[in-house]
Image (cartoon, rainbow, N blue to C red):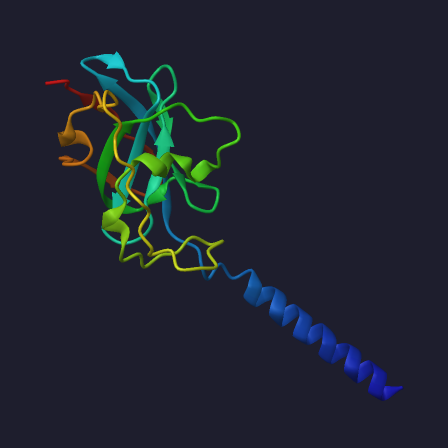
Length: 173
């Protein structure tokens, strides 16, 4: 009888230990929620892709609605962006189809500067440092947003813990 009680106690001890280690949040990152409005020459810019690229780690993305409002999402279904300094890229893209995954926002953005990712997303099970192919623009599909806001961006933003409201008023010239 003592043997059964001993085995039961050991099983419970191991189970509780595994549960505690599994819930310790070892893969968690410091995120701040980021929302804002993107305008072009004072007019809301709908269907724009907003990408915050941190100095180290994964980028966060969002898409503006009809009123130019956006909210950033971090890989792994988390809201926000890594706390710290970011380079910001804003570009246009075709509206998302309901059958496209949430990562589709990154399809039209040059992600070449994310090759040294130190903070993989929580659900990552592979090499997240691989580059995505950069699509070639079709003739007549030129981005109405000047390069100084996307491919040659001059935009910077600092994300702090908690709520961040970061607006962008882009100029077409």
